[in-house]
Image (tube, rainbow over the protein chains, first blue to last red):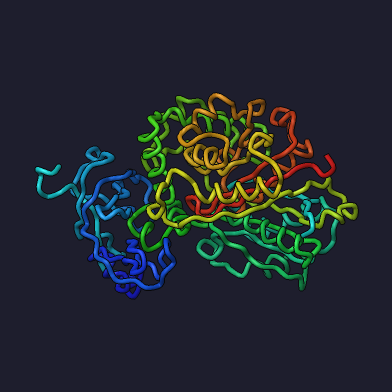
Length: 135
Length: 387
């Protein structure tokens, strides 16, 4: 992914920012220009809290090129508290620790390095809550 | 709207065609289909393909293939809908003929996946998913199917071995199809012990990427007497869509794109699920077979695996599937797959397949081609003309 594209996505990658429909209140991540529910084009930015539970997950063994050096790694779908589902890598846990329904929180991590001389790209991943009492 | 029929079919074997390029594969299949139909020229050509730009550094396939097929000056364009490209190309031809805009349209779908190493192909295939929000999280296309499979096993209490029914059947049937990629049987133990690609999806859940091209000649049904090939009616060829990203679906385990496509197809063809004699599903992964059976009305939610085991999906079963190997056994030349499915259904209807895999009583054949994890779905229903 090239710099302009990554820069354009910084509010999503660093802040988990989606949209809230001003017509019906529907929340979207990623941001949508048209509400999928009421079709309104009137929306506001909405920042998700970044807490949720694991809906499903996979362990990637055969990875796309730029993720090859990370394999095997976990990717999951996370049900956010606000009722929206997002896709992200799971981190700060072993492959065996993942289980459907476990609580997770968003954290900023390195996503990948774009080659030896390319930029290091950052974005959200999800981990078990840092406060271990919630685990 | 005019009724539409297919009067010619052609295909190359599904292989790693290291010595053939994209255009020659496409031209072979298209000219074979034209020979089968007995036509010298066409009003138009639609080309189904997904990855020529990414892997062969070649776009603009329409005019390229028309030229090399000896159809100088004929209209040709590429149609892309990820792994659903082949089915989508047929849909475009059916629209052109049904509307009366064209009388004779060639559809050729081609894919050349062995131009690069496996990891590069993995990345290219992942462009079927949402680039910014799925692929860029490190998710492969296999991974997306693994997310579905894990959740399915969790919600409906299935074991990994329960999925073996689909790949075991696919390999069994592929054994008798000379154009299939794989010619070896597998059993539940081999399936269950194959190495993970994206857990819980393992090697024998996943269809092999391969090269190949397949073609059909689509004409107005009122004109079939002008052609040589045995005509097959295409009663319906209908498209349904859904969100590209899996996470944007309320219930990812219910393929709404399939449901939308199949409901239209049943309605237009005037049939119901119990009328279907064979079902060529998009078995790119075992989980997709289960979910397709459910959203297509053959089984209730969560009952796809049970249905397959109890009704039987073998040649003599209640609902034969992957009759010539399916994506799993014949191979999955991504953008070409949708046309292979239709070519195979036509061979079944014409009774032109080897005896071991000929479905005995066959009236309606249904094919279903899926782009991405269910974002574009093309369902076709075919039957012999005048039967």
